Image (cartoon, rainbow, N blue to C red):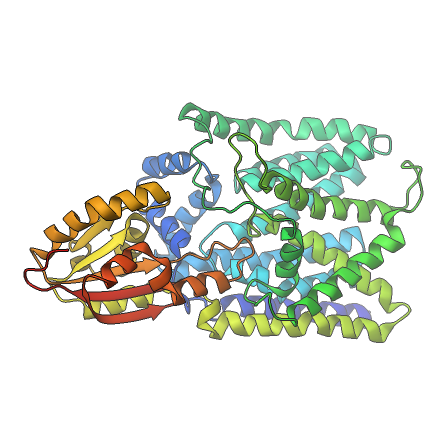
Length: 521
């Protein structure tokens, strides 16, 4: 009894730490572009919001519907918007505990809850006005119900699984990988669970029909060819390794440094221990031990989304090929990894207790450094549109014009004052070299001639989103630091106009220029 009380006291401490880490500094960072797009959707009438989601072709609607109801209660402010994700992230901790207890045992469940509570990767997305903390939460419930249905053969359990899966697929397209993992597992163990496989096929009818309905609506407006994911770079051979690094050490690290890999090695040691102990235990699939079944289930949950996303995203010469490799989509697999890591450490504890303490320190110390970067180091934070647009609003004169591209209009609308929004000139986003050269040679001089006829001072806004698939910010920071060499607009303006002021914020660079009264570009 005393041991059980101590166990639950530790769990309560873990839950308290989990909530504290997710609520701390919640409004300390600016909304980044995707979060601002969420705000823009919530400000639309419901019919327009659904139309915008369909037109974007990359989002399922449930998160936005739920958040719409949420902000009607807490308000459309940074704290209220992000608090929804905080709660989803917090609830994942007791749920992963329950799943770990059901699959493996209380000690592993407690250790997994602790790992998820302090996970920098999970905390980052628990503080973001996006669906990713919900995308980590829903599969936990789905997998818990799946395992209960698998063991109980109760139609109520399968009905609960069907309902939870229907909710899950309407959160994000990557929820389909959870269904795929279940299909792979049941296909491999069909002889072990013949009735369960048939029940599963019936249970997925409801989520399948609901998902097909959304897909049909998307196909009616032209399908997925115009999905706004062209910015995602093709995957390289090493991406899965960096995904595991981000899962274990967090996105707010520098992968060129050595210390984050300590967490990766410690995590892989735990996974390797489980695979060595239970991964290939026997050839007869009908008589495998429960531990081997659980091991295979967790490995499929971890590996299937990761490897299929990687294969789809490789730079192969295929028609209509699109990359979808982003770690935030793969958060569906994070709990599986942490369950395997915790289980492996628990196995090691039987023979080498001191090694387990070393393993925990190897995960917790890098996590602490990553969290310190997240909370205090501007270089690792989201693009600071709030400070940049606030400074521009205070500094720009009433007659100054603002040059920006279409992607920067939304931040100006969210964080700039109303006056600035009437002083803008939209520059095209020039991605193709031939179009870029033609515009800069033929159209840019005319545009600037017209602009400098009405004002002799103007601003150029340049920004760089963090498009690294693992969330590492170094490439973004380097681009902003070398913006004069990398940005064609700034290069062109720097050679023709006088620079008055330059100011750099996280992910953003502002330049103020002055033109002579009769300047001809």
